[in-house]
Length: 110
Image 1 (tube, rainbow, N blue to C red):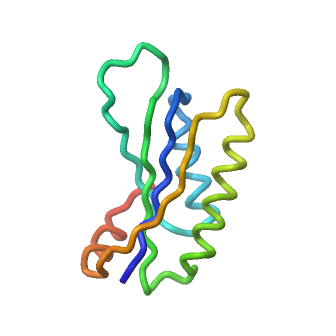
Image 2 (image 1 turned 180 degrees about the vertical axis):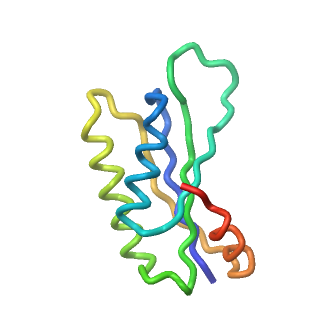
């Protein structure tokens, strides 16, 4: 089994914030990350309202799941600490079959 780590950010963010967080997560964890904006209908505020950032930790990954989750939490807290009004964030893990994870992990682009 592999583990999918997801970071959800809810609230107004700057247009380049998701890319910055992806870069920071990749640098800290060594994993490939991808982001998906959550369609929440029409929004009047600037920036993205909700994004989900995802990476998969498989058997071939050098970093353990717990170390990866700890690194992700550090990045998220540092990122939130840089904002005057930080958006709501959450970090979650989910077990996924290796066969599902392997192609996904290769296809994740940060």
